[in-house]
Length: 58
Image (cartoon, rainbow, N blue to C red; front, side, top):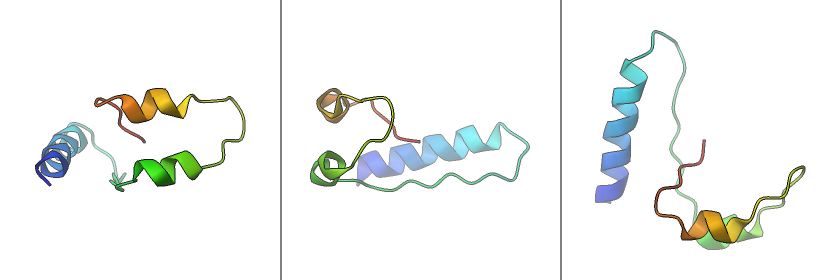
């Protein structure tokens, strides 16, 4: 849960830099769910994404 809290703090900081009415939604997604997603359009190598510790999905 510490990673989540750090991401949350970082996103609050990013949000405070902009004058807007946008929201940031953080949704945990397991690797199994990520692998079961269907991709329409440009192919994405999900193995590269799931192995990266620096990947954020927006």
